[in-house]
Image (cartoon, rainbow, N blue to C red; front, side, top):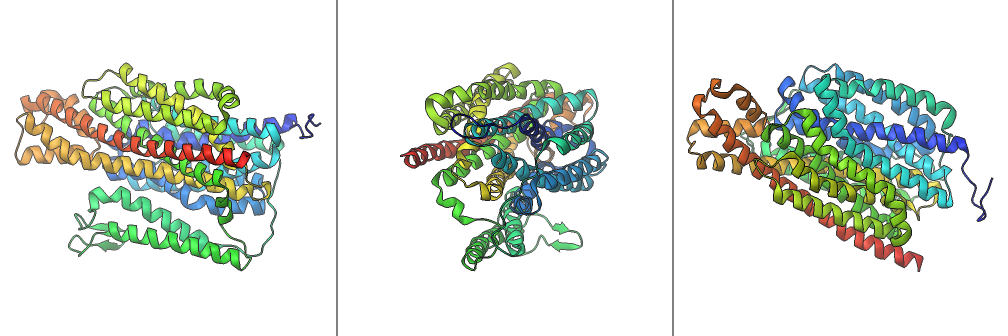
Length: 542
């Protein structure tokens, strides 16, 4: 069946396949955000420090970023449906391992297994949609794909809050098992098998290694900087049996930054060489000759940085500083989901009037306004319903930007390289999410080191004991506040416990504000990118 324009109309099976792929995609996006709200409970149960908590959140995104280019290429070669199904098996296995984790190391390792599975799933979904849907149907399908990303990311905190409070944090991973099994079974008859055209020989192993080293080292440096020291070492760094000593001349962090820079530069040089000798390359740098692809990816990265910065920092503030229970915090954060779902439904109508790039621009404007307002009103006693108002505005913007961004970025990309195009866009999003958690965690850690001692000093608590309390609160990502609040006068601080809790809450709120302002800066950069994206789209249409 074809439309009046000659574009083949998708079959009922194609639409069912899109639904199955979207649920599979939603599963892995949800898992990237559902952990955030459960982190305070996980920190308390497994005795994590702030760095461990960042790795539980970030390793998932780091490995996704490192692997997506490679798995997107594999999907084009071996079949996208096959890679999608394999990814589901690996992802569910990692979820089972995470649910059974009893130590920080096992949980972080399980998150790595989940990330490998997710890296197989994500590019397979988008490239299949790009290959199956044509014309006006492609825009609708991309809208569904983008809406699933924003909706699943936003609803994650509510789902995580409900599961953690009413069962235990282990269920945020166990819930993936039945859903993953159903998606696997449903995908077999509904999802078509597609492949990219294999025009060149070889497998780009070196490119895969360079990209993994570069992205991994970059996120490692940002996450570990506050604890290990940005230039001189503060602590020993132990990796298996190898130790970077505290008395070394330089910290491992600048070395990691340098390694990331060298590896990423070599990656670009190597990919150009592969193109020159007409061998298969991991990344088709020619894709960036499309200005909509280049500016769209920059915008997508900034959106992801802002989104995951918020999702990492706010649960810690709501639960540890404000004293909300997990479900209460999840309900506050659900305001993002409400906004995203409301705007996702209207994005298509706005796009018809302002165009997709214009709708992305409106969305980014709302995101910047929402987070900036949140940073300004946030304090040690701010009611949750007040916090939910700017979060709803932010969610409205997130829904508009995410729903329309995907189609805009890939709109000019030829179908035969859709696997690489979609994998590149997914990689950029995941780099953004990893860096969002990393930058927010670093900003929070650095700010806490300043705001907590100052707040304790203003409350009349000084000396070695106060310094140790401030450091314990920073290292525990605020869990110490919740513990003191629960112990009351029976804590080691005695009748000074209430004073200490109030002071630490003030300091934590101030640090959270600084972390949100960092997120605002990245979203503002995304707004600038969206302006350039709109101009590029207009130039292309002309």
